[in-house]
Image (tube, rainbow, N blue to C red; front, top):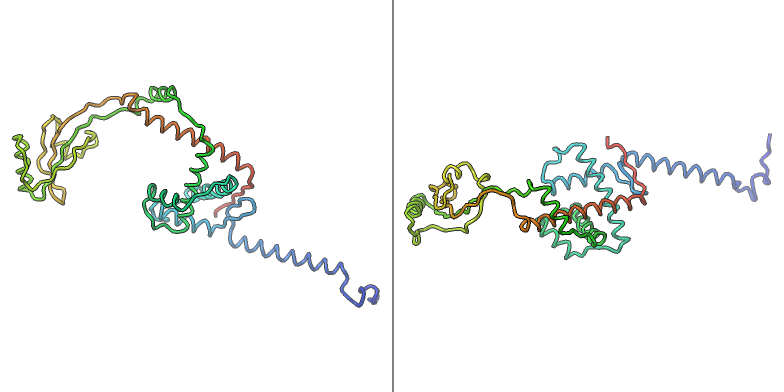
Amino acid sequence: MVEHTAENRGVGGSIPPWATICDIIFLMFILMLLLFVSLSFAQVVARVNNEAITKEELNRLFTAYWKEIIHLPVAQADSRDVNNFLIEYVRSKIILNEAKRMGISVSEAEFEEYIRRNIGSQSLSPIVRDMVRVEVITQKILDVIAKDVKVSDNQITAYYYLNLRDFKIPARVLLRRIYAEDLDTANEVYSRLLRGISFKGLRAKEGESMWYSIQALPSLVKKQLHPYEVGKVSKPIDTGAGYLILQVMDRRGGGIMPLEEAKPMVREKLLREKKEEVFKQWLQRVSKDYRLEFYSLH
């Protein structure tokens, strides 16, 4: 039997050092256990390095995104939609970190202008505004990493001839548009147009003539204007807010858009595709510096 003397208890009867260490270890164990229980309760769905993304956070963000950007009830979303959103959210965290490292930021003026041009609505929640801000920052990163991307005339020409079907132009008609508030006036306009007489003085308003694809015209209009001879006039069409009379002013047959006319479209498309590939490669490269973990959403 060991006798607990002052000597083996420590000086002045204090707790021996080994007992203090055991207490500390036990306390750390309890704290880690509490942390584990807390995270399990929160249900972590992903990690970016040491930063955890919980299911509650994901649901809050996804609901705002689906409602304000997709404009659909969140009940219509499925698990694949949520998974894709989580991946994009993780990528957004990487993009923001890399932008900070590159010294890239967005001023409030730039941000508000982007919303005005690309979204329109100013009544966005703070959550969605943060998402949109990532889009602006992404574009600014792209301007830096893809500043040397070019498209040559030879590449444009090659794309054009390899994809001629994309440049098919449907037959089109140039339509004169006259509006009248009541049927009597509309009928008088129709009568005068048939006789080639001016309808000036009548309570009718003429809009700007516009080109329309014959294929895309409503069936009612097709029936009225077929076979689309120049000068052909439609009978008054009830719009619910007045009457519309149409007259064929010109017609162009279908065909293939000329190369010179197609060049700006092709250049923009190829530039966009090249920049997207540059960004994809850049994101794959920088993502290797992050420890990314994804867990089941169930």
